[in-house]
Image (cartoon, rainbow, N blue to C red; front, side, top):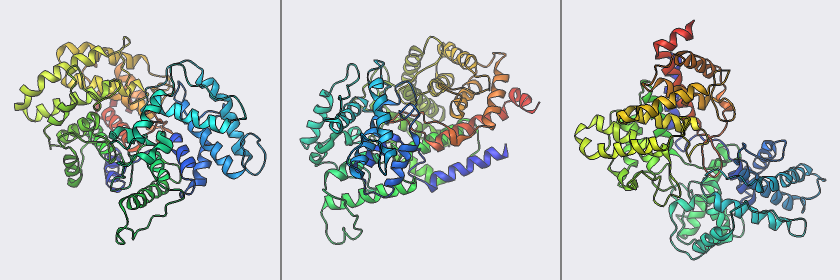
Length: 531
């Protein structure tokens, strides 16, 4: 128990030491920097990262359609690198034959992936990114081979419409800035786009690099004296963007993550996982103050450069209430669509986990401030019914922000168990039964393979809900605990949805620590652990 408490303290301290967040590198995002800013610090390391992470079949990334976007990005990036270093990519000879060989392997698998006919995962901007990257690759292929097709049901019309909008100089919604790189040369027309004070555009290295590349013909060398010398706003923005990209690249050794910073997101999830499990925390008061200050009338974004969203807002509110600093959750009502809550205004889809987190936030606030019940309990009842209606027949949930049903199931089952109505108890029981039915022989859980992260969510579903009368539960939890104790978190695959899959390392670590603590504190499980 002491080692878990110590690890939790170290984890919370790390949130202050690395305030932008701890995120894994992204093949998609790294590929865009290889093409857009080859002069940036860490270029050789980014190229090596792409070569190192290619699968034997020529693709990049996990299965089930998640490999299409990273493979397109990596292939196009390596084609661009071949053009710069040897002038060609179609002959695997010369000093960088490894580049050409990787490109040719990727070009062999891409027609298979593009023509598979299966629905693509619901990833941000995928309907823009895929046509954008296919068109770039086809430009490289001109005169050399057949062009790549687009996936069934996808065309260039939406991409062209967005590019026209960007080129017009109109003010752009913040969520579009996260994928500004799809604008290509049209980014030059995005006159209203400026980096945030820390230098990011859209909390995305690729978007920042695209903006930087679009406003200059050659490398922009950051001039730290620019402000003092009266330089223009664009020059100052370019200097800030360059410094930001340099910092991100250095922090991650060359390759870059898909989204940064994620300050509020990371702190909200880490603190809420740990607090919900009952781990005693000594949270720096300035961190709590920062979380409160981040929540404005429109909510809070995950980090600088992103729009406010209901998910980050609700988890931050829940964490504050759990830590004894409840904050009025009225800002969440701006996301209420009448039936359920959207992640942000204009969302193309829906998310059960977002609504589960809203239910958590409202429920915990009403616990702390009972007088608010008249305002929020009707909303909570509506959310409970909506969440139950989204449950799969087998008892699990799926979600658009995570590849694993174990994350979605834990989020929904815990919210319904804590703050749902008695009518929702059956949904929780079915969720617990599904978790028990899907445990792997080694004690783990996982969509593609057993992973520490997914096993942690499964354990929370078993140990934090009151539907725990199944005789299999204690033994399943003990086996899951043993798996987690021996697991290597460094090998945890990326499962969170963005333009590419990513892993928020501190958040995953918090989920694992929370589950270990729960197992050790549960008398039924601890007896089996010690036996």
